[in-house]
Amino acid sequence: MTVVAGPDLPDTQGHFGIYGGRFVPETLVHPLLELEAEYLKAQQDPEFLRELEYYLREFCGRPTPLYLAERLTRELGGARVYLKREDLLHTGAHKINNAMGQILLARRMGKQRIIAETGAGQHGVATATVAAMFGFECVIYMGAVDCERQALNVYRMKMLGAEVVPVRAGQQTLKEAVNEAMRDWVTNIRSTHYILGTAYGAHPYPVMVRNFQRIIGDEARRQVLKQERRLPDLLIACVGGGSNAIGLFYPFLDDASVKMLGVEAGGEGILPGKHAARFQGGSLGVLQGTRSYLLQDEHGQIQLTHSVSAGLDYAAVGPEHAWLRDLQRVEYDYATDDQAVDAFMRLGRIEGIIPALESAHAVAAAIERVPRMHPDQVVIVNLSGRGDKDVAQVAARLKLETPRSES
Image (tube, rainbow, N blue to C red; front, side):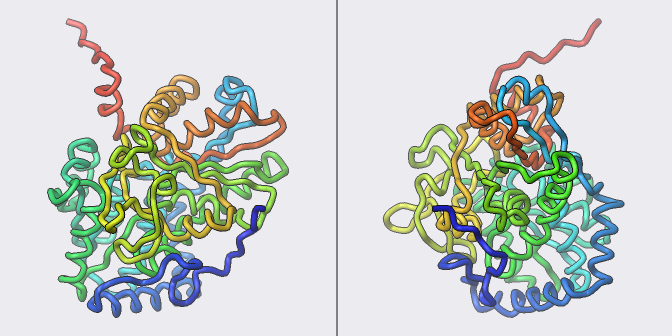
C-alpha cells in the first residue's frame, strides 16, 4: 500500500525516520549548528527571500519551461511527455538553484571563502559562478577520473576563477572529492563555507538543499495545472545524491494520485563494483555525515561504483530518498549505461535536445515506461542538465567520426 508522505520531516535533529542525522567530527558540530540557525532565520527573512527570488529570476533564468515533447510522445505512443527544462538555466543544470541559496547564506554568515565537491562538474561550475559573482575565493574538489571525463567543466571552473583540486585518492571520483572537501572545511572552519551540492550529508544539508531545489517542483506543479488543468500521473528524475529528484518530487508528496520514479545508475549491470544503484545492492550505513543506503561489503567497507555519468557515480543516496522508499511513496529503479547513452542520442535526434548523461537515465526510464501508459496520462521528466559536457565522452564511446574540415 502506498503511504502519502507529509512535509513535516526531518525532525529537529535532521532525521527522516531512521535515516539522516549529524554524524560528524566534533569540530564540525558548531559550524553545522551555526549554518542551521542562519538558514532557519533566512527562511523567515522577507529580504533574503526577495533577494534569492531576484537572482534566481534575473541571473539564473527562472522559471524554466515545462515543455511538451511532442515528437517523443508520438514516438513512444503512450502518455504525454513533458520535460522540465532545468538544462536551460545559467550554467546548464539545476545545481545553480542550491548554489545561489547557499552563497547568500555564506554572505550572511560573514564567510570569505567557498569550497565545494563536484562529480560531473555542474555543481562545481555553479559554485564557481556564484563565487565569482559575489567576489569569494573558491576551491573545488573533483576526483581525478572525473576531471578527465568532464574536462570541459574543469576549464569552465578555472575560467570563472576557481581553483580546481584533482583528488587522486581511492577511486578518484565523487566520494573522494567529498572527503577532501570535508577535510578542508575542518581545517578552515572560521573563514570557509562548504556549498555541498546534493541532498546528502549532515543535517541541515539534506533539508536545506531540498528546499532550495523544491522550486523545480513548485514551478512544475503550477505549469502542469495551467497546461493540462490536472496533476501529472508520473514524475521521473535521476537520482545520484538526489537533489534534482527531491526538488521535483517534494511539492507533490501529499498528492496520492501522483506516482514518482527515481532512476539510479545501473552502470554495466547490478554486480559489485559495476553500478551505483544503492537500492539494488545497498544496505543501511553511515557515510560522510549521514545515515542512509550505501553500497558496502559485509565489513562496512565502501564498494567501488561505476556509472557512465560522473554525477551519479556515488556510493550513497540522500536520506530523504531512503525514507520515501521505505514508505513506498517513491519507486526507485535503475537504467544501465547503454540505456542512458541510447536515451542521450534519441532525445537529441527526436527533440533537438541533448541531455546530460545524468538526466538521460530519467529519459531512459521514460522510454521504457511511457509506451505502457494510456494516451490520456501525463508524465513529467526532470531534464536536470544539458549534455554539452558529455558530448566528447559519448562520441568516443560510440566511436562517432569527427567531420574533417573542407580544404
